[in-house]
Image (cartoon, rainbow, N blue to C red; front, side, top):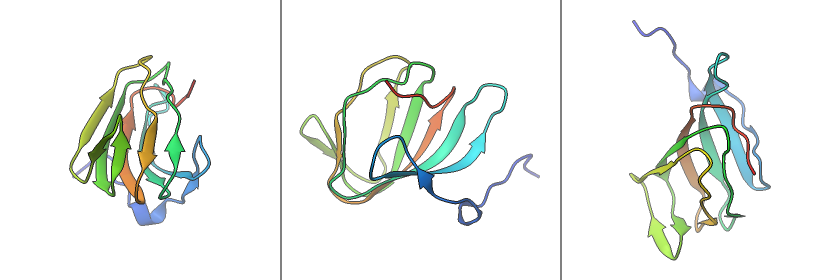
Length: 109
């Protein structure tokens, strides 16, 4: 049996760090501050270039069309942004849902 199980339908959507972005926290590691989240980006949302100074980010696109540096990514794409590395800007050409893991606190600069 798994030591932790989360049902996404049991978790509420909450505002993300940018307008038009929502987060559904599936798990938070109290020791590290790391989180596993579903992220939902409204169609047309542009997220400016930024860094996560305290966490490495892994994001897997579950649905939608994501654009970065004039390249379009769709379902099945895995992204990695090392801690402190600037990435973006990103644009959600359609509604995008990703499963994302931050291995430390989710902060944005």
